[in-house]
Length: 142
View 1 (tube, rainbow, N blue to C red):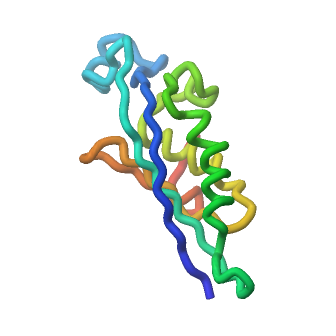
View 2 (tube, rainbow, N blue to C red):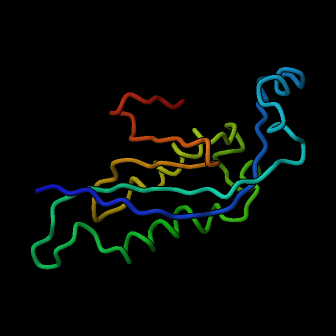
């Protein structure tokens, strides 16, 4: 028997949507107000879904304390109250769009040892959310 567990987390961070591959006018056209040279911030909500068999001795697929500690060390501590463009190494080379943030969080959490990571969902605003389930789900990331 395989069951899914979803858990929600929150962090606040700022970023600037700006691509070194585009000129100033093109960046402004593509990203609009999100291209503000001083950046802007969001209160992100991250939903992490894992799956696995129910351990007969504990009745759980993963101990929430273990999952919380892993998410905290891999995502919350590094991302919370940070300027993503400068303080997260991966976003020095790629634009920290919510799509790329979602992929980066998935990559960081894929090493969770006690269950299988199924997907990560990042809610950037009440209107925008992004979900990533890894390369096998048809998504690509260069």
